[in-house]
Length: 445
Image (cartoon, rainbow, N blue to C red; front, side, top):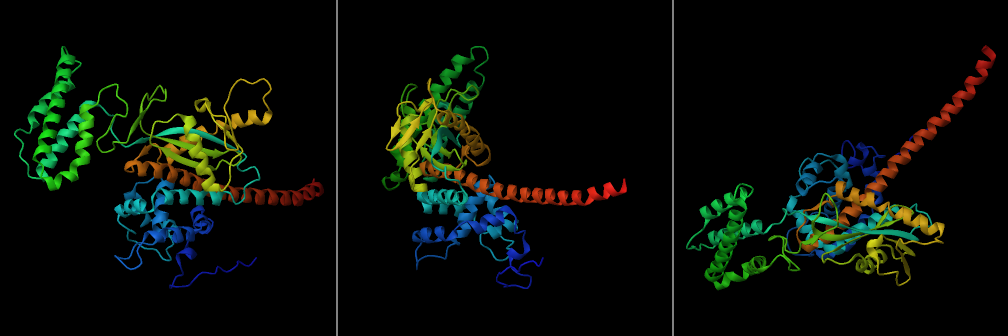
């Protein structure tokens, strides 16, 4: 049959970029399926119309964010790979191949801060819309809900580490502000660190404990000296750091709301009862998955150490914002005990029941399917360790990861449909050949 002509703007000698690519490639299909005008119309409100230098195209920046989480890349790597990959460039709306990098990696940081949490939620909403095109009527009848911890990119926190960081930061600020301390304690801290290192030697525990107390005293001494000698017009710049350092020096073992990191003071400690990892430091993330389709229909972050049952209202509110619907039933594990209903949504918690219905039993069995979803989010979509800064970074990271997994789901379905078409075609020709070959065998033999 005659191949239909592709209607595309012929702007160059060899045609546009779309004419040179495989038009059945999942990334090619995804680029044509996403409604990019939604992002253009929403995010243009964050830009000035007549001030400043011209910005990068909105579609380019949104596509780089999607590709970053879709391929599990850093900001630097996604920008570098974009200049080498034709499909990445077509996905970003380019008409011709450009061998240069599209932007500086730090522009992605500024764009994330510009669109904020609402922009990340809009990208997640679009990923749900794409997957719901050919969905069944059971969407939203039953959803699975579970929580996990997205760990922050910090070292395992100890008091000695934080005290040494305070000393190092104080010396750095003093060098920048041209402040002279009576003593820098550089050699003293180094010798005390050696004593802490060999605490497993004979009489080493006692020496290490004394060294730890001495390091804490030095950190407090330098911090107070720095606060006294800073000029009044400059002290406001370093006041948040000085307050955080003071809290670290004054907190004790049994205190609540402890600070575990100087550069990420909002990190919380979670004990989930895992054998291989007793404590996790980060924030709590709630994931909601539709049981009939497997689409991630909710991803929200909680900075505070809340009980799981208290996260249900906000998770259901986000579901309503993303889908304009309300789920009929939510299936959770026993960690959500305490709430059986929210508005018109029934919350099902597993418990011993004699006359349990088949539908309810099936819902509890399907709820276990959310565990591998969380595992894939952590291992393949950058939820295992959050590199974004602050609470805003926590809130956006979980939504970007969920959106990328939804986009990947749609790409896999396209590839699966192509394989099934080839199998059906092969089966058809196999039957035709068999019908031709069978009469020939009867006549010959």
